[in-house]
Image 1 (cartoon, helix red, strand yellow):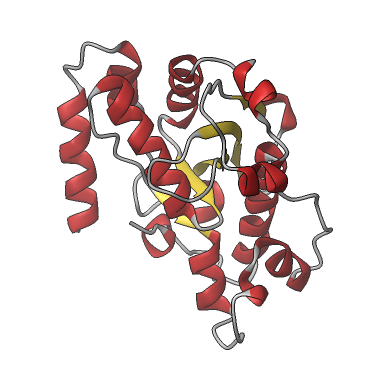
Image 2 (cartoon, helix red, strand yellow; image 1 turned 180 degrees about the vertical axis):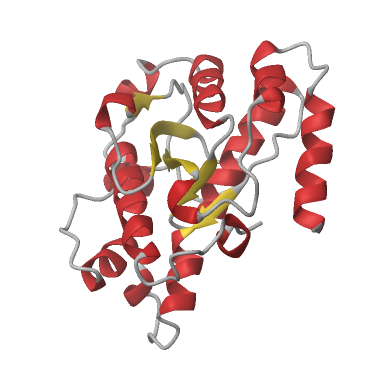
Length: 221
């Protein structure tokens, strides 16, 4: 499989990195793609950003590792990320992270090192996962000068496969998708809350799939 080859080749490129967090990431015990989806290790992740531009600032990260049918909150993390930039006013209205709060956040390198360590050996889960994947890879490139290979499951893509006949964008928003499975509404635009919401949605989606469904069936590049 091309995706597997690319991922493993990229990991080899990190094995001799001068940064320990990247070496550890490369050496992690990654799940086989034929692992059953209900037995694989995941990391639900969400970022709050200063808009959706390619150069948007990361302002908050929330993540929670999990395996199986429960998400233990004891390992969940929510952290503001330091920024001294002039933030996009429309984005501030949405997520509520203004310039004063952003200036008090943790340094980007500290947050990314912790997040990358948490993701090692796990498959990222997010709604519209490409946003989180690209933001994390952009930060890793900036901080460490290296491409970070990431395996991911996108709950938005999966929902479009399970319920393909919904009309428009609204039925595929995170809250709307959760409602179809009887999951409770959560306040949006907080990184940890959105990460947990995506992780719970993924667990509900798995109930609509065959019991022997594997990672190879679910992972999206």
